[in-house]
Length: 263
Length: 263
Image (cartoon, rainbow over all chains, first blue to last red; front, side):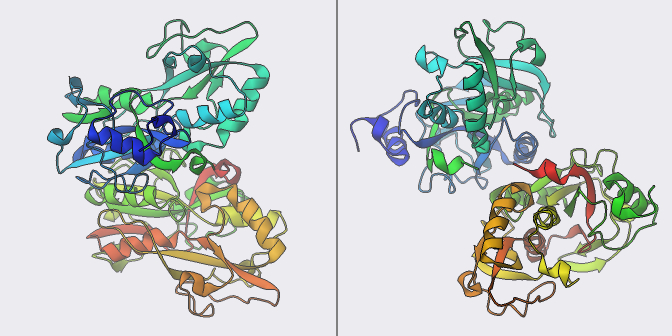
């Protein structure tokens, strides 16, 4: 295994997590490999959630869904084990945070279905490669995220607002960003809004609902993307009796390359 | 309502079906509006089938999935009624054809989930508009379709081979067709194969498994696309106790425009 997980493969980062050698956040690790959100639900909640993702593909781009009880995400990380291969998890009971372990083997059940959902790290790498700045990376904070007044299409017991992430850009950067991100429909795709935050029900850019505020400089407009917190917020709102998610920032490393998510 | 259903809207064709005024095939009707395959399954089979579609998006591009019992495809045909708005249906019991009615109201149940799946008519219209010929339309027969030796990714009780449709094209037409069809990922997208039929396990082009054989002229190669018969074949193979599908060629007309399926 490489000493530096930044140049490791996705499989090497998963192995490090499995051994307990890595328990921290994943941004910047295994560069070029797709990182993903994780949502795990009991079988009798899985149809509604799968339908929620199908109806809301921009915030919920599904990369893999497992058979009930199977911890191996065969499509994106064959040989992997979703119970051990993430650095940290959150365990939820009735919508309340119950545990924050680094291994969920003892919580595992035969009826659990795992959903692997694309994440914005993929298009951020493409933006940086194209010379488009990403402010929260520059400022070394978490991306600012906001609840909007745009409703997701509900599905069974799941409903809720679209949650967006925001990156400030100049007009020409925003236009380039739209073109670049449109290449990645399975990583939230092109922006959903830019300019006036009130247009999608955001009152104060300085007070994000999740993550950290970032500086918007003169000549820049806020640009908003559908965000992977949307499905997690829908799950927490629905209060299923049991759920597991990744700990924010502590993602699943897959075997997919960022370029695999194009088109 | 226009006297000629070719220039009608999708909603007008649905209304004509609902009144019993149209019971025939739909190719060529409501030009410019998206036509779609229909698969209806009981709730306890719906998760596996939704997962099958998620895992096999090229043959099974989902346009809409209803809540259990709800006959209205809200995303693609708001106000529509899937029990009455197609010209003809097939009703299946334990995988065997049980009825071929023009209305399934008497067969409807509170636990039925409907899947609306994109179809090749969308990209065929784009091919014709670009001057790329479509042989089975020229010859006024059904498109030839073949079972391949390419396995779909299974999901629960659903499994089976990829079924493909075939259109003969010259090399330059095939290249243009690939570019044009890539614009329509929700209508089977770009071809999956061209050239040697044996490369995907097809023995005899003159003996399609479904539809009719068409002429392949000197200088042409067979070009193969993922086909919407794939999910129907998987359903028939799984033999669920109850299912409804459209009668082949008798599709659901939606309110979507062909251009809505781009990108």
